[in-house]
Image (tube, rainbow, N blue to C red):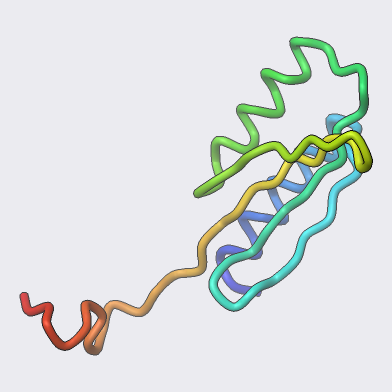
Length: 92
């Protein structure tokens, strides 16, 4: 499992420990974690949730009247540092 997967799994485990239903998905450039947020969440739990997702590269909350609230977090996979990373016009 890539390092992003390990980090995402740790985030998911901590969110699960807070009582949230989570899922982890591998993508070509990142690993994502999603968690369903119930209607009533205490302020203390929100603080803990934010502490957990702060370890991700990006995170956010999707809230709709149809699907409720879904918290998401993304951990980027490491990009190789060799080769022409910046493109043909970018030189060091």
